[in-house]
Length: 269
Image 1 (cartoon, helix red, strand yellow):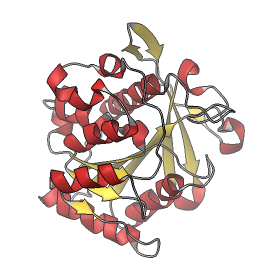
Image 2 (spheres, helix red, strand yellow):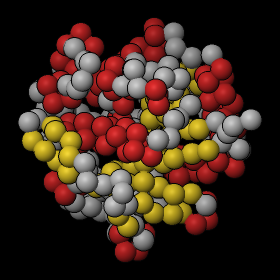
Image 3 (tube, helix red, strand yellow):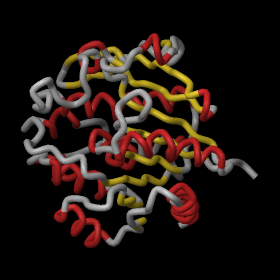
Image 4 (cartoon, rainbow, N blue to C red):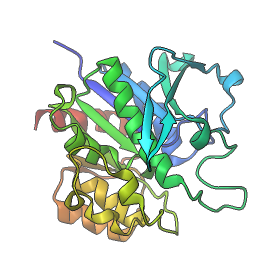
């Protein structure tokens, strides 16, 4: 029997970034899922705050070299990889000099969100999907964690709906309390536009607030995981209205088995 394949697309993973609810799960969950007998791949952005020498990142030449067009501009896609030896697990990093070289994550030194976070989200989502295509690795589940992954469900279900690699892939979107106060760029919808997508597919991106980009992600997901004890109340209501299979918040003691069982249920549904 073939191992089930789980693709983790994470906004943050420790030890590469400080510990947060997302980064701790981003580190522990893939290891636990791998140890439970599933095959995994793990992706995150290569933020400039990550020390490449200390963490032994190196470029994967055979996967790099593609250009992604965003807002009518070519942006080179660079793929790097590092290993977490204790977990026997590799992490792939999506890199680009313009988007991911600054020495911070999603906010500047004054705590303000970067004005191009919308483009960074587009680049990250498309970069992961194109890299998986190059790897020719068909995931049974794609588990998205963190708001920066919000476009992945839309792209998989629309732009790549006829790609044999993703024909049977299920999308699970985790919701955290990583809220930001200001909407993304007003032209996020135009920048996010991709093949086989029309305006009606992107209704929630007309006003790309934190809440609305989550609604957009939920709309094209197959299931939801609540990653924190408390999340935005409007998003919580939208999840209930969606009637999607939902795994409620799990305590740190037993969440990995609960997540693994949930993956199995969604794969078989």
